[in-house]
Length: 212
Image (cartoon, rainbow, N blue to C red; front, side, top):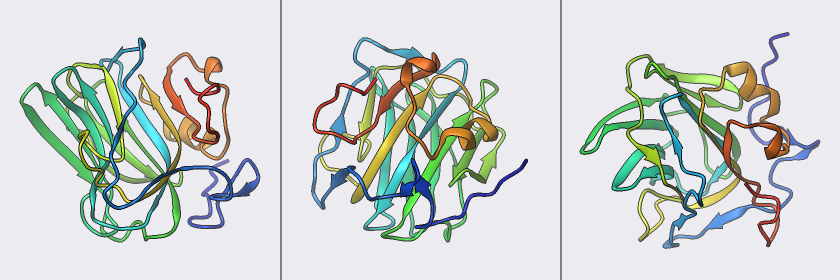
């Protein structure tokens, strides 16, 4: 059955309205969080998927989730202008960046959205908002290098470009299909049940015992 989720505040997570629990907040001028990849570095060669819940308090502020290799950026999600979401692939050490962007009316401020982006081993990128395909480009290339870090709130370690809240951040080292993204986008999962899930930040507690 092809089910389209209800977009916006009516989306529920674990049966409760999104935004009623804990989340990670970034105030204006906050410092991005470079969570690293711990000892679990991973390659992009089999594709990659990044996803999470985001509530933008300020639109058009730039990058909000970034994957980095040892000397630069591999992939980033950004909000470059107003209601637009972009996924940018850096396919060589010096950049070689290619983006795929949604229309500029896809998101609004002060509303929770589930945002996901997948990159195929062949180099095509897709962006999903609330489980629905919002943009795609079949020729973006593959993110360069081995992922050695994940930056929440921006694309550097100095000043966050993201102002708002985020929750349930997941990074996979495979391209997940539309059905796979939709199947679990509205619930917590057990990270050990998914070998391709390389980093999982629930952001629902003050301690990190249940993160991966």
